[in-house]
Each structure stands twice: as C-alpha cells, then as structure tokens.
Length: 239
Length: 114
Image 1 (cartoon, one colour):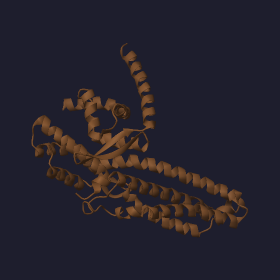
Image 2 (tube, each protein chain N blue to C red):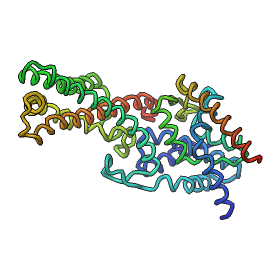
Image 3 (cartoon, rainbow over the protein chains, first blue to last red):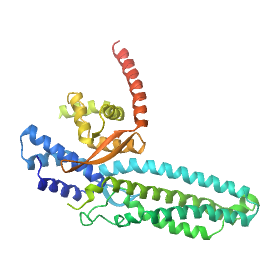
Image 4 (cartoon, rainbow over the protein chains, first blue to last red):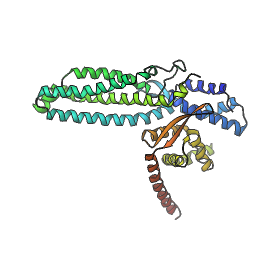
C-alpha cells in the first residue's frame, strides 16, 4: 500500500521530468500500480521498488527536441503522445483550410466586380477571426488555465495543448490585419488576367490559407485543452 | 543479454498488431487503464508480450484521436485513474480487424505447417 507521502514523491519526480499534467496524471497512476505490484511480488521496500520503476521508465523520460512546437526539449514519451494528438488535429485543420481556399477561389469567380470580391474576402477571413474570438470569449472561465499550473506552483503546463494557445492570439491578430486588406491582386490575376503581380497574388491567396489553417489548429488545441481540463477537474483541485 | 534480445525479437513480432490487441482487450472489459492493459496482455501470453509504456500510451492516444476509444478520469481509492472505453466506431473496427486477423493467422498456420 502506497502512502500519501510516497505518492507525492512520485508526483514530484514526474514534475521534474517536465510532463504536462494531463500526461502526468496517467503515468503517475501507472507508476504507483507498478511500484505497488513490485513491492507485493518481490517483497521489497518502496524505495527499492521506486528505484526499479524509475529505471524501467528512464528511456521514456529522455529529453528530445520537438522544435516545431516546443522551444525546449521534452520527454520522449510526451513527444510520441503529442505527435499522435497533433497529427489528428493538424489533418482536420488542413482540411478546413483547404475548404476555405476553395471557397475563396470560387468567390473570385462568382463575384460581380472587384469591390464585391473584396467584401467576400473580408467576410471569409472575418468569419475565422470572429469565430476564434467568440470561442475565447465564451470560454472565459478557462482563461486562468492558460498560464502554467497553479497546483504545482507553475512548474508544469496543464495540458499538452496549452503550448499552442499563444498561437491562437498571434494568428487572430494577424487575421485582423488580413481582414483590413483587400483581395485585389487575386481578383485581378484570375478575372482580369493581369499577371504582372504574381508574387503578391500568391501572398493574397496563400497567406490567408496558411493563417486560417494555423488559426483553426490553435482553436482545436484550445478546445482540447478545455476538454482535458474538464476531465482533470478532480485532480486539479488543491489537495 | 541473450534472454533480453530474444524477448525483444519476440516483441517486435507483436509490434504491428498492438493496436488490434489493445482493441480486443478493451472489447472484453467495460473499461481499462494503461497499467491494467499491460498486465492483462502479459498474463494472457504468459509473460511473452511485455508492452512497453512508450508503445502503449502513444497508441492509446492515437486511438482516442481516431475516435476508436474515449477516456475518462475517475478517482479510485483517492487516486486519479484514466480509463479507456471503446466507442461504437471502435467496436465495429475491432470486430472487422478481429476477422481479418483470424484469417491472417489461419493463412500463416497453413504456410508454416507445410
């Protein structure tokens, strides 16, 4: 039987491994069960069982780089889990981004004139901006969980998605800039066959696409962050 | 050392089927937690299949992302435990994969019994 003090020792060890709390809660339970089993089967002390368990997990906590999303090294097991989660979210974001790109191109061809298309351009990009702002506003209750955790005095992130929420603010403010611009170059390129500004046409078409994809990805991260916080609400309560 | 290598080689044969093994184990219980899955697999294979944590957890999270399973955290004896449950999509997928797997095993058996 593991005592509360021993459980805290395991938690402290895992916090030192730089795991986010949503991953930590699962690994913590795994380690406690593993230590308990070792104590029962091999009739050894908690310290010895903990040492053996730490040894068996050593490879999983080796710090590795994941420069695309994390500025500092993270444990190998966290990277593997995060890659699986992000891949799914990125696929969905890319689909939405591509759909918006197709809609944008269609709007160029169905618009009556350049002013008409500029209005569509602002509405399309504005909908992404408005959507993300509304999601942020309606979820004001979790704003306090956007910083590092308070349970362990800022030592850990709450969830593996938290890292990307800053991206939401960056993308939303960039999207606000896009909304203030016009889609002139794209309209002139496709409708008036003015091919003199190819680079600016590409920027007009693809910059919003990249931004929309990144913004949707950040919004998905925000929603997953919220979902994981709800699952962990009991764990997050101060002891 | 030889023993470890032997066990690693045996585990590598299970590598491509781990997902199916996890889905099958989950289909036999209402819900299971990570450590329980590793122990059940070990017990059923008489210690031959030792699922590493580094293989199990990323796979569980992948299955969750794909909508095959869902997770919930419950307090058990004052300790937070994350349980995994099969979704309807996961149940269908599991049944399909089991049929495929059985046919694959039957074919292997036929070949290796030559």
